Amino acid sequence: MWREIQGSNDWHDLIKPLNPILRDEIIRYGELVGACYKAFDLNPSSKRFLNCKYGKTSMFQEVGMASSGYEITKYIYAAPGISMPTQQDDAGQSRWIGYVAVSTDDESKRIGRRDILVSFRGTATSTEWLANLMSSLAPARFDPTNQQPDVKVESGFLSLYTSDDSTCKFSQGSCREQLLKEVTRLINQYKGEELSVTLAGHSMGSSLAILFGYDLTELGLNRIYPSSEIPVTVYSFGGPRVGNSNFKDRCNDLGLKVLRVVNTCDPITKLPGVIMNEGMRVIGGRYELPWSDSCYAHVGVELSLDFFKLENPKCVHDLETYIRLLKYCSMIENVVKSEDPWYEKAKEMVARNKMIHVWPWQDAARQVGDLVQSLGF
Image 1 (cartoon, helix red, strand yellow):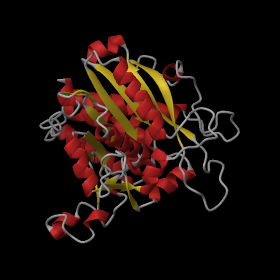
Image 2 (cartoon, rainbow, N blue to C red):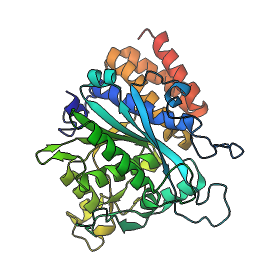
Image 3 (cartoon, one colour):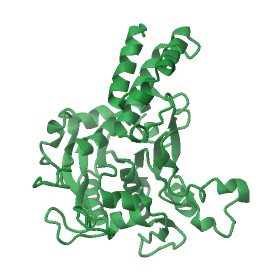
């Protein structure tokens, strides 16, 4: 059922309740995104500052994921294309943003197809945060033969995706050019096999994943034969809105599948477009208002996480928080029913001790797990 897990039916009947196979896949792709954070060098005194600490062949092993089932084929770099008001160590500099990988033969047999994966880390530097906060919309214009000026995306994400740093010694071309070239190469290499393209990212990285998914399908590069399309799926963790309502509609028309994993307390998922967003449908009934082109809209299907009401902004947006929520919610939901008194007792103990509010999330998650075990679940 890998096509259903990849969203062929828009995850119908797989979200509520959350299908255990889908849950495992979400966690797996989330951990593959987490590898980017573990490998990213943020030490200004390091020779690898703003780059990956490890080589392609050893990266998974170095971050503790030697059995990931994927082989990295290319590292991807991106330049913000944004000027900072003050001199910053990372201003205007191209930085490592993620990797392209392909499933091994054994992993391909296990999952039922050859999976081409692109994994993007989230925001980590000051210029990237600035790109996140830019709220102006700009036409994407990815297809030169069909530019569609009404399809607009957030200008900061677009700049990060399309800007080129000619001084970068690790890459040639913009993030977009690198991705299109490498993924097209892999599609041609494995075109005799059953293929999928999976794009996974956290925060800003989820925006790049959606932009690339739109770009790939808009150009038709996932169509090997006229009657055959390679499914393109995005797993978004804590992602902001990327474009306007026309962008959302165009992604739907192209068959781009997006599963947005969202913590309801995560403020980043409410941006940009805190006011001018898809909620304007309630006011206008349809997108026929004069300012409709300026309304942001989320793309895809939402999987909402709200097991614990986390209020610390440093925790609610953390990728590890998302993965742990999925793992621990899975443990509790799969072993006890919501009406079970032990389940209610666990929730009461958590609320009474205010665990999540006073502990760092990593400690909180571990102690929640200990609590579950101590109750005999």
